[in-house]
Amino acid sequence: NEDDEGRPDTIIDRARDLRRAMSLPEAQLWPLLSSRKLRGLKFRRQHPIEPFVIDFYCAEARLAVEIDGIGHEQPDQIARDRRRDAILLEKGVRTLRIAARDVFQDMDAVLGRIARAAGAPD
Image (cartoon, rainbow, N blue to C red; front, side):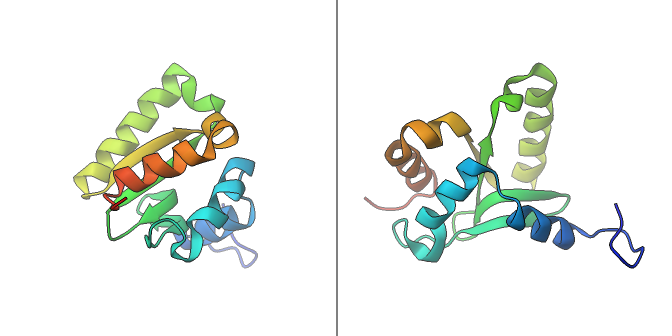
């Protein structure tokens, strides 16, 4: 991909584009994670960690939160996600994968899982 001036898109450009085009479950979750609303944890949305852009990232917990749609249930995508998670772990970042349907069906449980994974006190 290239920008309007013919330069290759950077990971920062990709992250900005993804912020403008968040998926519905991401858009529903973000207001509950932003501004330290979840137990004082600071999250960033569409945060670049080369070579990836993470859906939500908590630096203090070194936790990546990925919201996975139904496409992530396909065998080839499962394998790609495992490789991605392993690369992030090599960088010291743990990944918590949450099914998009869980965001729609039980937001309280999703928030609890994220808080526990980040090590936030109850």
